[in-house]
Picture (tube, rainbow, N blue to C red):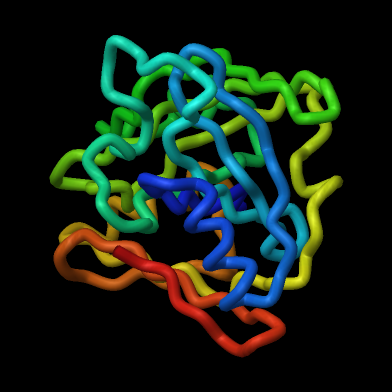
Length: 209
């Protein structure tokens, strides 16, 4: 199941404004990732899927390490990764994938505070942004006891299709099978890339890199 798409950007404000204007949808503040140097804004993509616009948070000091999702190296917004929410506990999924020789990394505890003060806590694996996968394999999330972000998001846009291109498409299929799969995903063979098509009030728009 697709939890969210990650649109990383050097400027959250500028990219959120573009999405509002070109898509014709509301985009709302998500919150700051304290200690990571980033913040996000969100809009729903239908059901329990959403778009995360993430970039540097000027209210935080720059961390002593690269910010997540490669935002320090971006000059334009880019669809850099996507997140899957498995139907089983993360430990079970990671164990199954490890048996297949696939390592998505360990699960880490994370949190952020919404603007209304609500604390969201979750576990996730970190995205594999470097070659050979370049963000095409999902990172995984478990929202634990937190209310899912989509419960308070507008859903004026709907994800039509996420197309994943990878030199080893069967590897991608193995990961998807372990996480529960999704009917909104197409897998193609080729150089690693992500492309999403989204139905919006102003027509079909594309996200990629």
